[in-house]
Length: 170
Image 1 (cartoon, helix red, strand yellow):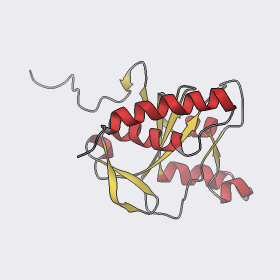
Image 2: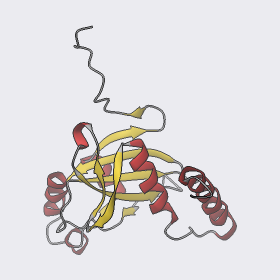
Image 3: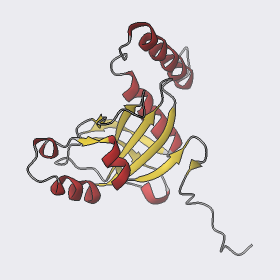
Image 4: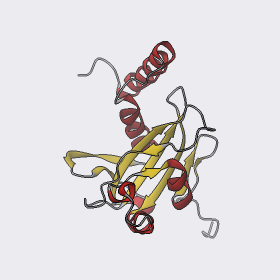
């Protein structure tokens, strides 16, 4: 039996990582990715891949993501005016259906989540031509936001309410 719930541990990790950055000016390595993965799974109703699958962090449990393999990426945004922020390498050669980009604020709280399909990302990478960045699956946050779909915000929750049907007979 666990001494602490995962939700409480993630809350404490957020606080410690934010305090560490304020004290040292450097991010606490690896923490934002774990927090983003936890938030994406909880907020988008995904299931963690267990055992792990190469290139896939989670599987969709219902709606438009049901059964889809999801790669989760994170980026902490400390200064929105700063351009050129990049996300981690997207491994195009691995078997996945969607990439979810979780954007975190300076307190490591999720404020937006975007998603893009394998086909959309492949097309964007192909448009990048022979650039070294495109070849290794690198992409800016701004580009991902342009080609992806905003699927969750702190203000509104899920942006695509798949379960509400205003045409249903009542």
